[in-house]
Image 1: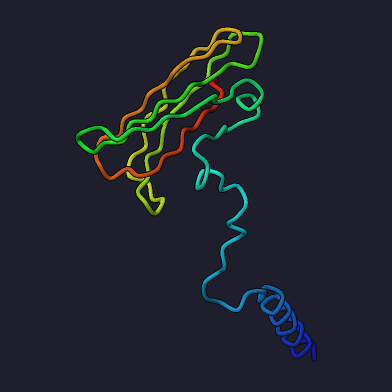
Image 2: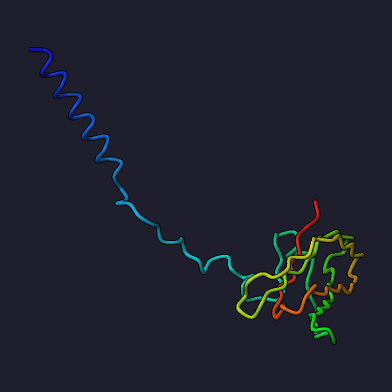
Length: 139
């Protein structure tokens, strides 16, 4: 008499376990909101963190096509703070559709109090049509 009760309890437990986990019916998932945090897709200059956002700004950007077809980008980076800051800066070159064709390495940039510094990037090939200059606080 105890055996049928035990079997019934195991069957009920297994049913509850498998039905509780069936929250997705299988297949692919939809992406989470892709319009959030995608500033790099549309902006030419972005700041990666709060420290850089409080200390650094970009006063102007110039772009120029070199005779061999490569894209040259020059930016004026300004320290808005009253202390010397160190940031890291790089440039991501993209094709006409926004796909990355080159990602330059980050380089250190030291900015004195209220100083402005020019930074130049040149793409390695003629595929670059767009760009994003990225700045982060050096740690």
